[in-house]
Image (tube, rainbow, N blue to C red; front, side, top):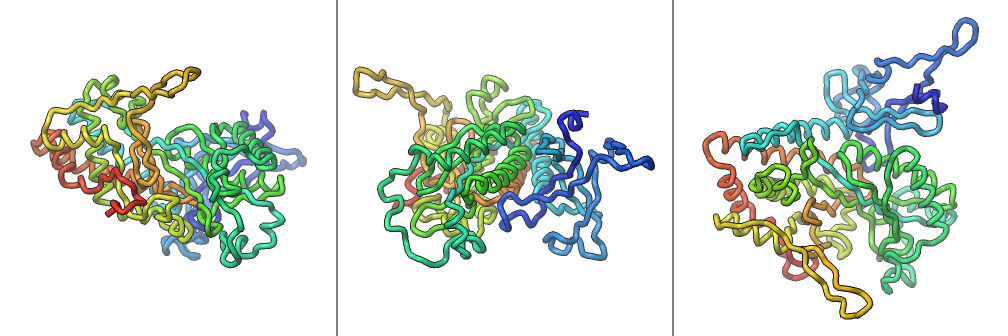
Length: 468
């Protein structure tokens, strides 16, 4: 009724086939079906029931799947994902779904994410329960900072390498690039601004809250970012934003480039995966003050941080593999992006707290804002956060409430990235819970993990000689 009232006559089960990762940004799977047939009298008869909403059947053999489905055993199904809202574009209702084969194997990017998050939630609930905290579940929340280039479409049309490979493979450097540092956050080019405004408006119309737009460091480079939200829905929205950027850019005589390193000699593009864990009741488990106020157990924060530090150290190879691609590997470690070796930045205050905690010393994490004097009469002194920013770290703790996985590439579907984060955290939470059930208190388990995996903490300059 909602769709028909707004002019919809078509529906599609919308999914993320495996071929979406690294083939073309914003690629999704969709088959459009009309919601009506024609009766014997030639008049349209509308039919759209619950079964059509919840499940569809399609070919599972024509996407990359490692042989899980082949032409003579091709059955696959799309199943409604309730984590991501249904939306409407033009005359079509889009129903976000997961894509599974006849034998239950995942054939897409989304189902592994949902399975990993379910396991992570179960192990986190178990661990929290052993610390006296009751919750219905734990979920990943993310906010994605999407970077891209906008270039004149007529110039793009003259570069087959840019069209076919996503990057220039011959030619000479521009006589002037980003040497003057005059592009970052500068006034937006009017043609690009008209494009970005239309993208934002199109996003608002279907419920995607794009909050931020600005110029980036390189010439012709831009960034857009939404509000935080639950990972599955945010990933769906990001894929749709990428598609709309490509479509709307063409209307403005521009080409939108998502490949991580389209031009030599200037910065490439990333997609920062700001990541946190929260209970289903809305408690951010990476916010010490929130945990203490809402759960009444400040020890939970240290235990969760210890489990994450362990996960990042033990499975840095998986995190690195999750962001590996030909485009992104040209960008990582090139003085414009984090090093390709995974480490975690915790900042001075959190490092001091966890260092004392792991040594068994009494410690409280209560970062205090400091007052910055401006040195002029017209602008008063103002408060600033306790921690500085470290833009050279692949996985820094920021804003007192989240980690920012900065090594992610701009063209990526970040389902795999967040699948890995959920999986490695699930393993850490399980190990912690097993030991607590075995008779060791949670604080001792956390201290042991921090002492074992402290090597992954690096607060220095990832571009400097001090980087190991």
